Length: 290
Image 1 (cartoon, one colour):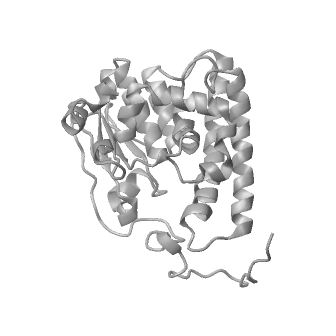
Image 2 (cartoon, helix red, strand yellow):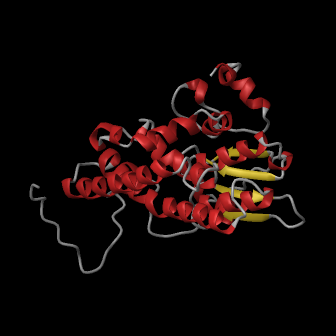
Image 3 (tube, one colour):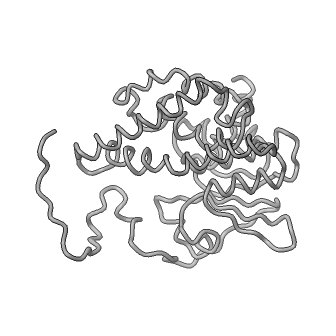
């Protein structure tokens, strides 16, 4: 490994607003809102504020899966939060998620609105609310929640770690890419070994653990998340690929991937979702044909 240019950290860190690369305009070391902006509210009990990053897709897939099961109470409005333009720092959004990260959910189905932030917490909230996709049998529930928490702890190495330094950093740092590539391959091996013995992560049933993990690691092995598949030799992980393909064929997953999406092919984008008919209006018979 080549020797990097020398860097000696200062005694006290200071914020250099110009030293942020592609995300310099939205990264900052303080919390709280930067501007006043109320959030829109639609007519459904569930109000989602999000973007179709992997973390956002987790929740829209869950909501579409609940609707596919016939849970009418899972109808939702999905409002676009453009993180590249700093929407997550508006006062209304910060009021729902003080961490200023998507997704964020307001559950207005009861007498007092409930805010839920962090994608894993939203999945658990919805699973318990509707009694779906989270087993009640203790061992199966523990297995599912364990894999969900595994994902919540592992994905930052793939996203903010390898994804950032391999794809977005203003210059390549060999040590950082090597370190995170090694960890992501270890994580893929963890998944591959689990999926060699089990159809889904939690066991025989499709659960919120799969919904959470699929947008990240399924997207990685299928080449829709970063262009690092060849670099990581993802073809080695046959069980992960089998699982990723299996989930991708679910109609609710196809719909969930489109919601709050503002990139990719135009027919794959549904920046806002307010009714099930929005998919038909946007894509015609595309989903049915697939």
